[in-house]
Image (cartoon, rainbow, N blue to C red; front, side):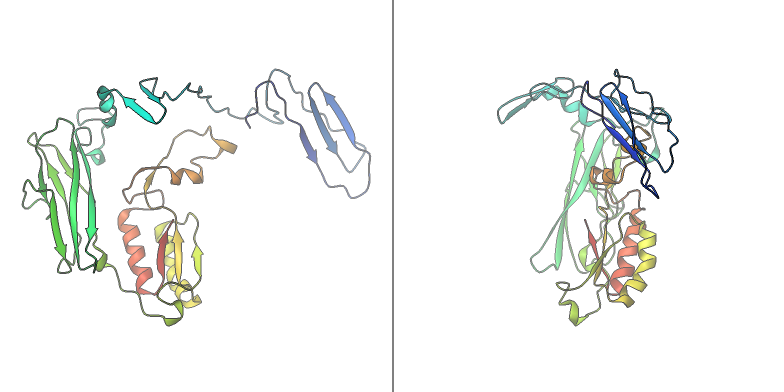
Length: 301
């Protein structure tokens, strides 16, 4: 519990009595601790020091590190500044976008690929009839090197970062990007909308506009998949899941109510990769296909 400076909270502990008994009040400077008991036995009050701003009955709760309030609109150690709606950032600060350890770093992991010098993602635009999709790879080279792109998993490369696919493409698009120095970026497979499992036509759902949706709050993808047969039999139109993105996690326990990786961290994405604490991209994809084939639509928050 974090309180305002120089303030002491009022704490009340109550045990429901079986009969009416007197209430014993113990006065502590700037604090009133009240106990109601079922007998005349006096419960010792917790000693509270006026120099602290929290009350502890057993052991000291961990205290979050207080982050100093930034003045004005400065941030990142004062390197950024702004006046009104105009924001000015020193161009040299672009280096902050490249924080991933390189392959020679002791903290490097294979899943980092060459993110220290090459990053990117795929952007899709579908035609009005959803019969074709243009896939554009938006890649960034730290050294602004010319890049080569592959849309077939690395079999062929070209300087074009765009390719259009039609419904004839029935498998996922596998994208790979390389630079002249050997750095490479392998994106997660891109599934096109027409490769989704078709949903059985159930008239009472009015094409997904009328029906019950169950919210499986915080369930893993494999668990959601296991429930879809029952949801279909029970008449549910769909199931809602948490945002399937890569989100903030921490190894620190110093959080609200001493909870590890609080649930609302999932609403703080660090990337839009379909990997999360709820499962892998492959598990998510399999769950969606299974549920859709049973007539249960999947809705992401």
